[in-house]
Every structure is written in C-alpha cells, then in structure tokens.
Length: 159
Image (spheres, rainbow, N blue to C red):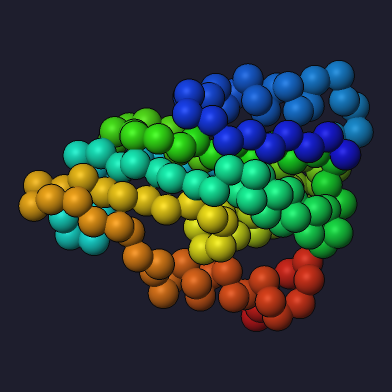
C-alpha cells in the first residue's frame, strides 16, 4: 500500500495528490478525497485567521498509526494525509485525506474514519483570531460522537 503522510506549512494541490496516489495503477477502482478548508466563522463568531500548532514527530507517528488501523479495517490500496500547520486565513486549505481502494465503500469509509480521527485525536491545537480577541478551539461533542461510532466494530459505523 502506498502511504504518504506530510505535515507542512505550505499549501497542497488536492488533485495532484490524488493523481499521484493512483498514477499507473489499474487495481484502484475508487479514489476519495476530502479537503478541510478554513472558514470565516465558527460557533456563532467570526474568524479572521487560525493558527495550527502540532507536536513534531509525535503528530506524524500518530497519524501513521491511524492510517495503519484504517488499512486493517478496509482493503486500502493507498492513503495520503497532509495536514498544514501555521497561520491560515479563511479559504485556505487545512487538511487533505485521500484514500484508494478497489471499491468505493472502502475508500469512503476509510476517509471518513481518518477525518474523524484527525478532528478528535490528532495532536494539533487551533488558535482562532476573532473580532473580540483570540481563543483556543475546544473539542466538540459532535466530533467526539462521530469518532465514537468507529469503536463499535471495526470496518463499519455503529447502527
């Protein structure tokens, strides 16, 4: 399985990364991409910028561990996870998850699983710049609930 994990400050090209993952492969029947983008609002307040911090080394290792978990749960043929750090403004790309499999169900489920992990457990911290000052982004119950469904049984969401 081809795996790419990168943490970087510079932007990424989602289409180029998806093409790189599937180039020359005739065994891949589905490629799913998800791009997370910085919004100009959150929780009823405006956001003018967001700074993402991470724990170098640990963040890459943790993401790799969860990609391996996804590989055990679904028949993946490739996965790319790119997460940016540093200061971003609304409209900037933040995160990219690309999954490849012979069939769409596995590619969709693995991408969903990896994003739920990245939203809830990856070692990243977000500082928002708001009209009234700055504030650290707290975990959301809805994100925790989404991630909890993967605890029910490997390879499927809870009913």
